[in-house]
Length: 439
Image (cartoon, rainbow, N blue to C red; front, side, top):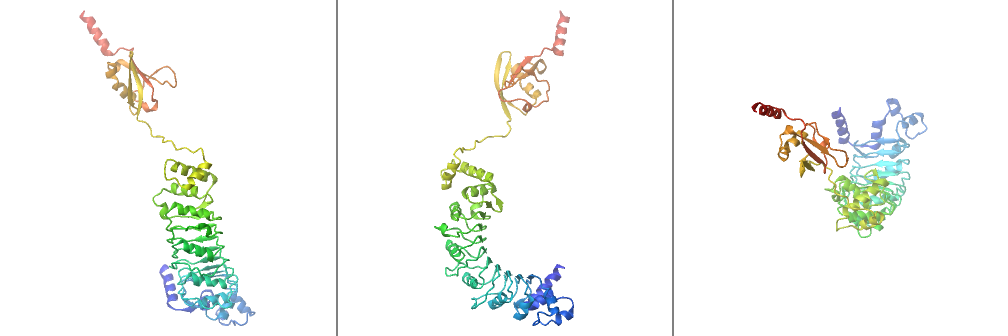
């Protein structure tokens, strides 16, 4: 099924057709008489109205082999209700065809003509006006920023422009101003210097959202306060940004509050928590970072972590002094070893003799008693051990279970008291009986 679908697309791209023909091909109704007998000049014709009603407000004709619009009057009547048109991946080469689309679709609000073969300078726009067009997508076409900026004359209300994958190295300072634009996507478009951003700011002074993913730009220049004064949302992931000082220049953008900066050299080798904490701490105006909201609690924790990180260091950034005024009580974290201890130091006593010993708490009571036979000078069955915990301050208690592990009850500073067993061993009684017999 997938193979047959590809075959259909390939067949359509191998031949060329007009936009009118493509619409008829995709949206024609089944009644042949209805489709063949429509008179396009008579819009009141009931059959014509029935046919026009088959064309939806959103028309998608990607990879259809379209290279022209066809008869403009037919297109005008076919698409009188169309608001969205997607003709990406076709064969348009002439900008005049695009201008005719503007003229013939008066209700058009969204147009995607990406991946077409459009190239060269735009023709004279004349009095062409697409007064309702709000979004224009021009990805992967052969045009310059200056060429595209000329479209402003016929797109006075355009708000969103996509101009990515263009491989153009710079924005011409002579580009026309486009005050209506609020959202720009120009990923992989060759932006490499702060001068490009400055020209962009002049060209689109009211820009609120900017995506510049996969551009080699790494600096905001010496006067970042002159850039993009209305910008609220910025995505500069996979750019060349490699310096914290450059990142902090974003503070000069007075309305910026939402930032995406994944995959930049600055963050390479840093743990994820470190990346986010330091970015939040350095950029106090950011409310959303990489798609996640920055809460008041997170910000305070990030600022404190930032201060602790730089507190013992000589290379403190300027932001450190600002945050230290806010969090004056900050102190370095104490390096606390929370791993369990293997040994404790205890006092061993027997008949007035005392000795401090390091004892492995992984031993059992029986193993401890065996290790004390040399100190006591008695066999295992002739003495017992008692445990004294000075914190609890109770009397010493006999330790009876030989299989009990010491870590379950022994602590540093405890005492083990060794006493002669009150019960004589069988060996003692055998030797005593033998002595009595020999008397």
